[in-house]
Image 1 (spheres, rainbow, N blue to C red):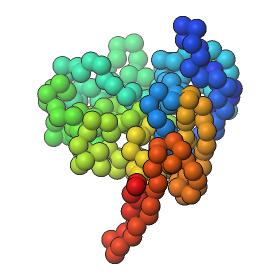
Image 2: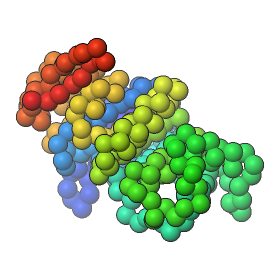
Image 3: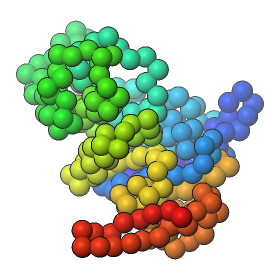
Image 4: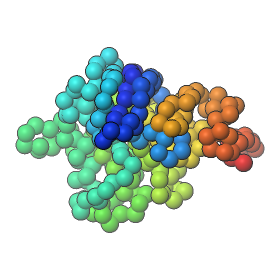
Length: 252
């Protein structure tokens, strides 16, 4: 279990988060939703060090997560940030191989097992055919899947991604969502930030709603649908429809 205990973040005198308490259940898919600048990214960035915890603690499986060395953190948790500010001019295989760095020695030379894990990660994300292509030459959807493959190569049990579907077309979004739900189905703990309300409600085991840098509600998708959250936070209502092919959520 991942636990945030009284976590506060203060940057340049501005309080970004104050006394956040939250438990993330192991083996489940948790999705954070809320308006822009509500604190979702700031909270998750405490996990990769981009947001420094000013007060409180983060506990992962009974250990003080913040006291772990960076390489030990990377073995337990992989983090895909919202924006890749620099797209490297390296091959896809080289990018994915970066996910093995926490396990390599001083020479950073990959062994046969590392190479096998990298190949499996590329196959699972559907980027094997682009193995030798430059990451900077790929379409947005394929590039995102390459970065997810790097995450998978870390072989961590806790996988975090901040808005992994942003700027992607519909087929690419669907593929990315399938990858993360598949990881949850394999027993991984998955944490996502999503802007698409209906997608979040369709795939999550648990929803965390944030507003004004606070957690205002947590619950199952059905609990969120039947609450005032869609109207109060997003200004919409959620309706469920079904036909012979399945059930659908729409916002009105």
